[in-house]
Image (cartoon, rainbow, N blue to C red; front, side, top):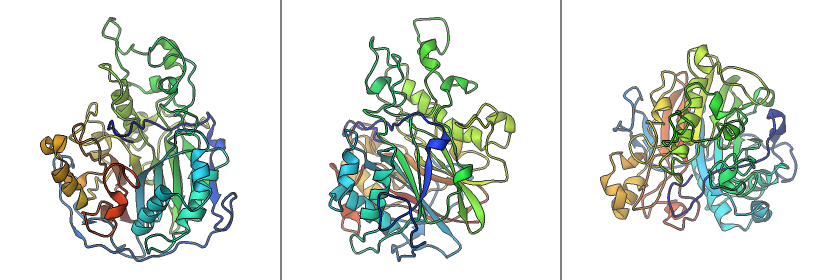
Length: 452
């Protein structure tokens, strides 16, 4: 999600519903409006020179170096699975607009987004900032009219399975969350959004989704996290009291939602832990968004903690308590809106998962990131992070380009390759990233090949 004044996109949204309101659908290649049977995992040829990745000040020491491609590279074998995240900016300013845009195959942005995905050819991809609708029409239309149609010389890509569910952004809270003196509008929604469903999420997969075991954490209240980093009102002696008691009784931790989506790969399960924390900006000195971003990331750190006590407060939307068992394999992915060393994060937010004992801190890279940093200057010239790891092209003056999108596997899964789809100028695919106003998004697709 953008942190830049170029595009103030802050959220996702949707109706309040328990996990039963979510769906994992079989794809219908010929029928975009309904679930059906797809053609199975297609194996396309993706090309790109590989180079060795390396650590930088934003990469923990335990993150192993591995082969990394500047844009998109060949899979290292049939026994690996490519997992990707892409904040595709497929959001619109009014309810129903995205569905209308995707109802025909002629939308230029959607074609370019599909072209990026077809170029990288992930087996599992999380798409952030994709407007949710309860009939799942937009998600189905994008698959049928764009992913299942070749673009830019690439073969179509078929995802027989998808998962989408309600999110909090745009959902009215009924209280004055921003303390403006009035109730209503996007800043008083449970997550910033102009309408329910804006800035949602969708997962597309070539492998079966274990729908019965999906867990969502949309309704978990922020105040119920022990030691929550709640914002403080400096005018009062009480700590963590910027929000009123009435606000804390309705304010969820997740600005959109947190999903644990089990995917069956080769007879084993990989838990896709998907989210899109709020940007740590667009607030005041109380830093309410920065603190919420920190705790949204902390939720995953607690969820996969080896200590059951750390996750004992976590209750999913179906009422089940606790985190992920220590023997389960997982991938944490999404637009986390947190850079390891630059930007406005509160309390080194992303390090809660980068330095986690159960997580491998991958370091996907690109050639386009350093080039953009050099050409754009501004805040980029004084940043501490390695621009090869950047995943978002934000405002040149502030905050500059950042690493905010991640694919972080558990230690049981071995990274065999990774990359950020950000070609240098003149390279194939560079027309899909471009400069502002971007043909796709101000974020870049990030992928990691995993074995295990």
